[in-house]
Image (tube, rainbow, N blue to C red):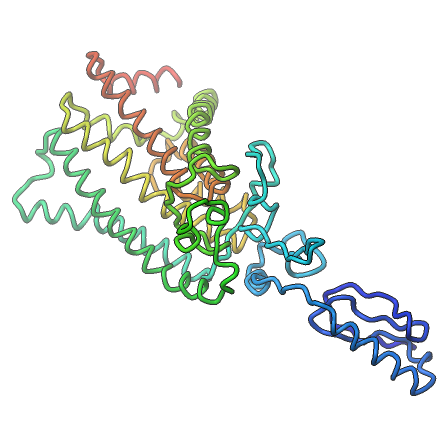
Length: 417
């Protein structure tokens, strides 16, 4: 009969000064002994092994990984994993402890000098999410309620109180109304997301050791003020940092330009597939472009108002909500790829257009993967804003050439069916 009394995360080694069968931990935060009871023959054995334990205790300990507790609280990061509950810190030959990657789950992107565009293992980064499922579900519900309340209740009521009929608006006035709605919705939504997340993020940052408070961008920045202004590693939520746009491997402008080049192929490919299978004819209804086409007029104020809405404010709002809040929050409960898919479907559903749902989901996937690689919201904002601005500019150019945009859209849909 053998008994084992061991509680250690470190490897064990044979003790040369002790009787056969004794082992001691090499490096561990707790020290214990493993032995077969039948080999305990004399008090001398205990004395000799006690000296070995003292020698083991005198060895330098590896620094405990700071995010081991958040890892235990995030079940998604244990999917498909066996063994220890957290990624071990590795010590260099000089005795310094290498810090874990900024995402806490995946390759150490901070040390990479290549972009790794086709390295799928580098698209699995997650976040150290300091809030639970109730705050995620409640936050999305509150945001959707505020979005509907501002755009469909509050602003129309203000117009009616001012004696303005929404049914008699000119194209320029419709564009102005859309601009007012979008501006108020953006302000309310950003304030709501901040109220939901500022407290937990501040508490999580305060609980981290001071040595881990620098982010990947701050460690690689040459500016002496960068470390103090960057978020803690693993807590890089809601980053809108224009610095180092082409710094490998997370340069936000590089991933933004790559997404801009890929978006026509992604959206066009999905649209062609939908046309081939007759999806739009089967679903019917209007798409998102129909609402914009009805406001097109050949004047500069209308174009600038719609450009501010579609090219700036809408991307800022939607990327903050669906990528900055929802996608990052979901990485606590599911793998990163599933979080990207779920946030993309939510992004498509929020546009309330069944006709455009598959195309919007495809665009959402591109935005999500780009954000996972850059961890900077300027990347999806750039891609999203560039796509919307390009579509809007094309519609205005066609109208300037004398093309009836609404008739053209209808004919194109008939032809695809």
